Structures are given as structure tokens and as C-alpha cells.
Image (cartoon, rainbow, N blue to C red; front, side, top):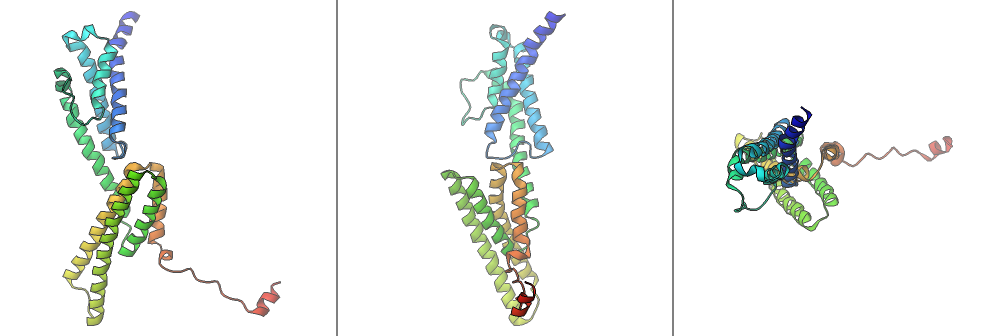
Length: 262
């Protein structure tokens, strides 16, 4: 019985475990800088499904393929798990059975990519929901850019951050110009903004928020969960009244009051 148990582990469980482990490494490399595999329960479930399918394919490859007996089971599991490794184009030398058996895995991986991107967008939209004005957005984006440049000193990442920041600044300038022109027109005519003016202001601010979301998603994809508290601190600083008003000076005491307190 122990011999059969040992054979079952060596033939089925070990190849499946090796395949799942290598698939995990491949997924981690593929999504590095693109999103978080553990960003939500949905993405976590899809990731587990990919790993389980990889392990199942490895076990099936050992059992069903006629020539599987000529190769060690562990090698078969490693070869199946390696199909999750990122590469620029499909390897033309791959065995046809590997392509066929991993067809469903490719569909699940595609769904995982979409889910990870959706998690980033959802997180970004919720994070920016508390920013209400273009002035607050400008303060937050400026601090966010400095925060990212300090933590991503590589040249390529620095160029990406600065390029996104330039687009955000342009969108914020447009939103501020629209809001200023509408406020000036309403002040001169002593009236309330029209529906078209409210729509124009909202659209301009929404565009600026969307551009800021690109920079925030960069921080999400390249950062860690432990950095969320620091990002929330930047947001709180931008939305507080202290960001737009100088702190009040302490009251000045007269000379005899200072003498009495000695």
C-alpha cells in the first residue's frame, strides 16, 4: 500500500505541484508592473484556477500521452507549467498536445488580465472619489509625482511618470480655464450657471480625473499594499483646507505681557 501511495504521489501529485509552482512564477513575472494578482477575490480566484488547470494538465499529460512513459513525470509537469511563462510569441516548436491541452488555460489567463486591469481602474476611481475640485487635484497630482519619482529612480520609469504628469497638468489647466470662465460669466451677469455650463465644467473635471487615474494606476501597479496609507495621506493633504490657506499666525503679545510671564 505504501508503494502504491508513493507511486501515486510521484506520478500525479508531484508533476501537478511542479507545474503549478512554475506557473505561479510565470504569472508573477507577467503581471509585474501591470497589476496585482491579489487585487480582489475575483482575480485571486482566477489565478488559483489557472494554477489548478496547469496542475491538472500536467497530471493528464502523464496519464494520457502514449510517450509520457519515456520521460520523467517531473519533467512533464515542468514543461506544462512553463507554458505560463511570458514570451513575445508562441513557440513554434511546442508539442501540439501542449497547445491543445492549454487552450482553456489561455482563455482563463486572458480573463485574468482583464480582471487585474479592472481591479486597478476600480481602485483608482474609488481613491479619487474624494477629490472634488481641480485645485485639490492639482495639489494631489504634484505630490503624487514627487512621491513616485522618489521611489522609482530608473530612467524608463521616470520618463513614464513625467509623461503622464504632463498630460494630467494639461487636462487640469483646461478644467481650471473652463471653471474660471464660467464663474466670471456668472459673476458679471449675476446669474447661476446654466445646464450647459455645468455639463462643460463637469466634463472638463472628469477628463482631468481620468488623466490623473493613469498616474495613480502606475502607483498601484508598481507599488505595494503597504503604500496605500501613504497615498491616502497625500490625498488627505490635498483635500484639507491647509493646502490652500496659510496657517494663522499666533497672536502677538505686548511687551508688558511678556514681562509678566517671566
